[in-house]
Length: 267
Ligand code: ADP
Image 1: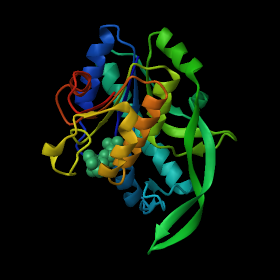
Image 2: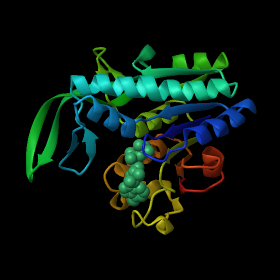
Image 3: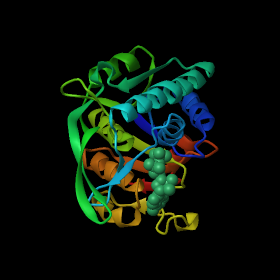
C-alpha cells in the first residue's frame, strides 16, 4: 500500500500526478491519494472578501486560523473544486476514483481545538473560534471497503471532531496517520520543491537521505509549512511506515520518480 499526498501550492501538476497514479493503479498497485488546496483556498478567500489569516505558534509552526467562514471556504475549495477536479481527471483516465473528505464516514477523526496560541508583534495571544485539530483516528474500515471493491479513494481535509464538527487538519499529518493506520509501505509527500532543501530555496541543496531515527533533527532546515511535512514524516516512520519520501509534483512521473529515490528519502 502506498499513500500519496499531493499539496496545494503553486506549480503542482495535477495532470502529471493523476496520469502516473492511474498507470500504476491499472497494474494492480494499491494506492490512496490525499490532497491539499491551500493556494487556491487563499485565492478564493481573497475573492470572497475574507482574506486568509495565518498564525505562528510560539514553537514556530504556521497554520491557517480557521473561523467558521474560513472553514466553509476551505470546504468549497478542498472538497469541491480540488477534490472533484482530481476525481474527474482520474475518471477520464479510466480509474473509478471516489472523492471523500475526512468528515465523510469519519475517515479522519480528532479533537477540536477551539483556541490557538499565536505570536503577534512579539507577544503571545490566545485566539478563540478556531476550527482546527489533529487526526487521531482513521476509519480504515471504510477505506478497505472502497479498495476491496476496486475504488481509488481520493481524500482531503477537513476531519470530523469527536462531536461531529468539521475541523481543519494538516494534510501531511493526516496522510501520515493514514499511512500508519494502513501499515503502508511508503508515504509520498509531493509538493512544488524537489524535496527537503538544506538551504531553501536553493534546489541544488537537496537532502537526499534522512535516517528514520534522526528525522526530527532535520526540522531546523524546514521553514514555515515545510515543518509540518517533516513532523508528518517523523510520525509516519515512528508509526512503522518503512519509507517516507518528500518528492516533486511539478512535472514528469512524480510518484514513480519518488519511489525510485528522487527527492528526500526518509528510511
Ligand atoms: P503543499 O501545500 O504543496 O503541501 P506547503 O506549502 O505546505 O506545500 O510546503 C511546501 C513549501 O515549504 C515549499 O513550497 C517551500 O516554499 C517551503 N519550504 C520551507 N522550507 C523548505 C525547505 N527547507 N525545503 C523545501 N521547501 C521548503
